[in-house]
Length: 375
Image (cartoon, rainbow, N blue to C red; front, side, top):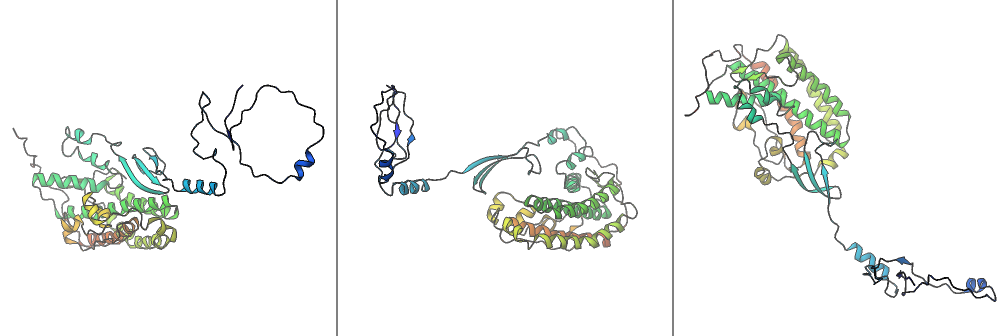
């Protein structure tokens, strides 16, 4: 005889052997219809062992049914601790602007912990440069950040010039400063507008890429390439600015302020934009310093540090501009800092156009040589 464990008031043995039915003298339909309703408990199958031993009754189904038992079970379930949800973000993800893997621990829609896995774009640039000259190593720096090309070249060139104790011509300094701010605007446009697109605002993204195309044309006219310019080089710049380019940059700079206002009109006071940025990604000033934040990430946390002000290079000590600083250290403050830096970059561009002197654009002393390797 086989038995099944039933989650009911008691344990019943169900006979699997066919039985002989006795003759029914009369129908019981009328009796069942007139009988008082009996409160029943739903029957469920509970897993048992191979020897049909009783399993642990986690729901208390085998206990006598008393009023309030179901309520107590609901309270016990609500008191349980909900575990965080862990997901993999990347390395190839539609919302990721680059190859990066993040292991995210989520509490609902809130990210409570992130474990970044970097190095997926490691190309061994340092080792490759060991076998190149200073000039041959320059194009590698264009490819470190595809939205900050000339500033990467500028950083490398400044290091080489300091190593060789070389002073570049004054006009080259102003050209570097001019295109450094153009590159800053390119970088901030990509940052703000791709952020807006991820949140759901597509229109500013399309407007901003029109402005990026204009700046890419300036890149192409001065160097012949839209992205990997290799224009800023140790000793100055590759060549002088072509005729008419400064006038076109001035025409663009006079109308770009209106594009900034249009973007702010769509984002800055937008309720959805504010709700999705304010109070998100808060990094206090002390933590930002401990994490070695730089740039807008550091200034958005309330630290007034800008290399162009604190350690000026090229012509930055001859221009006037302000450094915007955040107060709350969240995504919204960092967005406001970038929007204000658009306007400060325009100030610097106008000063470069007005103060740029004539003269050579690179060092003409071809006897400069790198220091000898130590024995």
